[in-house]
Image (cartoon, helix red, strand yellow):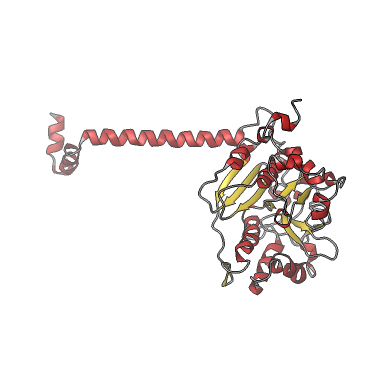
Amino acid sequence: MKHRRLCGSKSTWSMCTMFRNVDYRELFILCMMAIVMAAYIIHLMSLNYINSTEGMSNGTRPRVDNMCDKSDLKYFSNGSVDFRGFNNYTGYPSGCYVVPDIIHLIKFDQSDFTFIEMICIASVLINHKPNRLMIHTNAFQFQGKYWAAIKRLPNFNRVRVVYLMKPTSIYGFSLEHGYGSWHASDIARLRLIQTYGGIYFDSDVFVVQSMHPYRRFEFGLEWNYHMNLGNQVLFGHRDARVISHWLETYKQYNGSLWYYNGGVLPTQAVLYYKSELIHRVRDKFGTDTKMLYNLYETKDWPWQEYHAIHLFNRHQKYIFNESSVLTYVESPIKQMILSVMPDYVYPTLEEKGELP
C-alpha cells in the first residue's frame, strides 16, 4: 500500500517508471561484469605488489636505499633541485645518494634480443642488483629465446618494460635520415634521465661492479684525457644542469656525422667551459676504442678493475652465442661472458664442463 501511494505522487512518478522499465536480467549481468572487473583489477594490483616486494622475505632485496632526504637538498620555487654550488668532484657531503637506483636501457625497433644483450642485462641484475631496471621500447612485445632466458634471470622481478616513442625530430631537424635512427637513442637517454633520474647503459655495456658509488653526484660520465665524452654510460639526477645544456647543442644537429652531437659537440661546447656540471670518470667505464684490443685480443687484461665496460659489439666481427663463446680463445671477453651466463643457457652440461 505504501509503495502504491509513493508511486502515485507526481514527484516520484518518473523514478517509479524508471524502475518498472528495468530489465533485471540485464542489471544482474552488468553487476556481475562489474564484480569480475573489480576482481581482475585487484588481482593485477596484488601481482604488482608481489613483484615489488618479492625478495624482501628471502633476503635478495638490496638494503634500504641511502637516498638523500628532501631536507638535505635546496630547491627552486618550481620544486626542482637547486644544484648551484654542488661539488661534483666529491659528491654530496653526507655520502647519501642523489641519483635513484634505476637502470635505463633503450631498445628501439626490435622485438628480439641478441646473446650479448642478454649477457649484459644479466651483468646488471647480478653485479649491480638495481632496485629497478627499465627497458624502454617502441616494440609492443618482446620475443625469442634470449628474451625467454632474460625472464629467468635472478632479480628479473625488478625489470619493467616501458613503452617509449622513438624521437623523430629535434629542434625541427628530422631524425629519419642518415644516422638519425641511432641519434634518436642519444636524445632519448638524456630525456629519460631528465624524467626519472638514474643510470643509463647502452645495450652492449657489461656491468662489472656495483654502480652505487657514482650515485652521489649530480651527473657523470666517462671523459678520458684528450678524448670526447663517452655517452654509453650516464648517471644523473633528473634536475642535473648539464642535461639542458647538452640538449641545446642539438640546435646544431648534424645527422651525417655519427658522434658529432652524441659526444664531440657537447664536449667542446659544454664540458670545456662547464666541467663542474659533471663528475668526470676516467678509464672506469671502458668507453675508449682500445677496449677492442683489450677485450678480444689479449689474455690477461684486468677487466675486474672496471665498473662497467662497453663491449663495442657492433665494431667487432665475431658473432657470440652460447656455443661459440665456449670455443673462443681465452680472453677477457670470454671470462666476462662466462661469469654471468646462466646455467640453463649452456647447450649441454658436457660443454659447461660438469660432465666428463
